[in-house]
Image 1: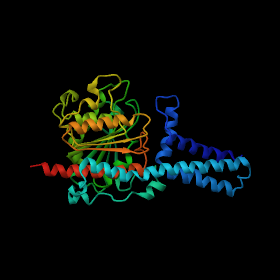
Image 2: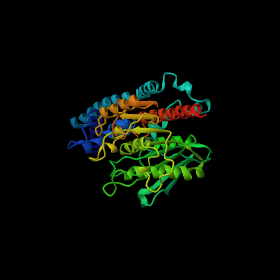
Image 3: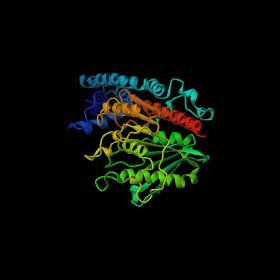
Image 4: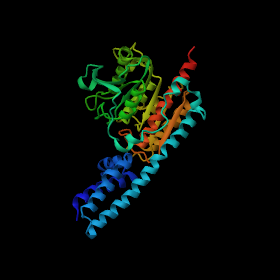
Amino acid sequence: MPFGYLFTVGIVAIGTWFALRPVPFERPLGRPTYYFGLAANELPFAAFFWMLLLPTVLAIADGDIDSAGGWAIVALAAATSIGLAVIAYRAIGERARIERAMAEGLGADWRAAIDADLARGLRRRLPLARILFLPIVKRRLDVRRVADLAYGDAGRRNLLDLYHHRSRPSGAPVMIHLHGGGYSGGHKNSQSLPLLYHLASQGWVCVSANYRLRPEAQHPDHLIDLKKVIAWVREHAAEYGADASTLFVAGSSAGGHMAALAALTQNDPAFQPGFEDADTSVTGAIYMNGWYGVYFGQGPESSPLDLITPDAPPFLVAHGDLDPQVPVADARRFADRLRRTSASPVVYAELRGGNHAFDLYHSVRFEALVDAIEGFTAWVRSRERTLKP
């Protein structure tokens, strides 16, 4: 029995099974199986090539497949490949589904409404080479990361990283992103890096920030930290080529919850102690695999659902329909209420087969969403130009 080959194929088989049939996070096996399923769900091509096809070829070449047990492992690899094919098929269809969501939220001719100078920079093709061969490599040679800039007095939890093109263009729009982690973990150099590096390569200035965590911090401490980040950007980002009058806020999971709260409480002095006069307005919000409910038993004032008003900014909401941590019904409810109340456009992209934290890698799914986010921000920026006197 070739145990090394069995171990490799077994890991992929387990991940593929739980990608197709995720276990709700609150159940005993929910947390460990989630991590297996996430990698297989977002990286089916890499899983097939590096952990199924290549090991199988090597095992056959080495003469390890010379028993019933060896051929049983080959059969398991074949069955797992079928499961990965299903996962890949769902991901490949994501681009068309997201395009339909954009048309529903912005109008069928939304691309035609984008100003010509902004439309020229929109990517038309997925970076297939990176998706297939370098899905976990985030950095780009044309982007500079300025690490560990302090925006508050809470030590390392009040540090941010700033990303900008090495040519440092002037007048750059800004994207601020907050990581997930259930408000009790996570760090700034983790989630949505494919998004931040891509936008920075296109001339944006992007920021990813740490914030204070539970249990030492509670709501609204995290939100106050995000407001401090926005205020810091408005004060300092011009040093890196930014025009912070165009500023989008984004987040993943808990970070998405926080980004939505910030977008729905713009310039509210209750969440700006000591910097009440700072401008914390945002141009729009990107809400990815987020939490939509109240904050750990607190009242409705801690939920984005209960802060929606007619003057909410434009939103793009993206959520996986197989998210084991936050039911997709919660995302649908938020998007529906936002559409019925807000005067601004709302794009709701439901990702078929999408898991939680789908924004970790250069995957087919997330790169399709990255292009949609870039298109959404270009549409909003064009609209803002039209509305200005």
